[in-house]
Image 1 (tube, rainbow, N blue to C red):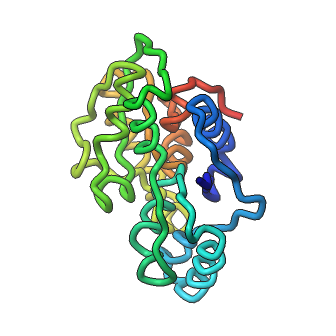
Image 2: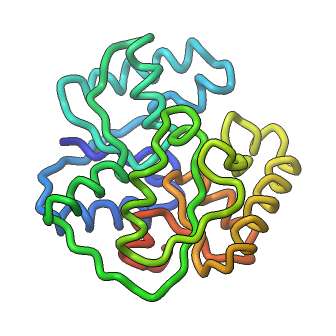
Length: 224
């Protein structure tokens, strides 16, 4: 198995990669991390740089083909699942939330439950694009009490970070994140948890509530 960290977690939110690897180690999962990991091509593809995306995807595919791959990023997951088969080839990929659910159900990973209220934000790529709503929630319920925002699952608001919006329209991106954080605060939750580094980065920029990746939440790691 290869753990593909993704650009945002690898370069900006390193606690996500540390937490993910710690959980995999605790569960006894054998995996490797690429020494020369490059971008999966998702951002290039979403922003119209198709040729550059094709080159990036081919380079990454050559390193991943024939291997099982676990990813932290919902964008990477969507790209490997939906776009790689159309452009370069099939990738056997699983999102970390799905793998964690499997490891917990098999008794390979023990999670210490706490008296905390958490709410969950559905990343667009994981939820609406690929229909994965339940695995992250089932994992979160092992850690604390899950309280839902009014707009969740198919109706969840976008965090405002994807599709190049944060770069091209920073004010719009910020206002979208503000609205989503307000949704979270109305639940009374102590933590806003999600499964996408892009979402974590944009939502935590607002402040007002502590934002964590699912892996960080399970370990309650301090950000670095």
